[in-house]
Length: 249
Image (cartoon, one colour):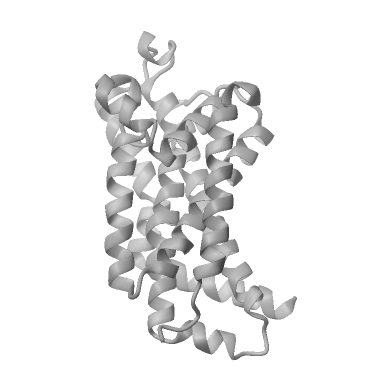
């Protein structure tokens, strides 16, 4: 247990020492909130159910942070450590391979949570963002969405032969997904064609689930979102487990 704790702390320090990963995980979403809040404000508007744009943006940006870690940080970091032989050396240590994976997942999940907490703090302090849901429901929804995209990230890392390929694949998946799912621009203001396309994008279901739970919707209103994210978690987890490689050979 002591070895696992030390390994987790080391992993977290390494994550924070990577400026690009730390910035996009912790500060990108709050800065976007400040920018768009300065432009649009947070006055209630009918299109958002008499809520402000920042009210609906905070839970959407939570999904953005989840996607950033799952589709960018995980594939690049894991593939890079495999390519440089770090994973192979970890496997040769007295610690079990599962201990390394547990510590790494814990760090990714913890950094995602920290980014979300900073986002919420900025939203509440600057724009008095409304929260009408139940905290436990939001935590469970956040955990489900995070786990689903973490497994997707590990699947990309497992299939990509190099860190560069993992980065390219992650970017190809990440950028269209965040702009077409409502994670950056609310779907309500996008054309109907884009809204139809969004139905086929996994991140859309994370955005809808988190927004719904944030505003107090019952779980029964979001069974489709739960099913989609659970399916992504199960299928992605099984595929990642079967294809995960400790060595680049």
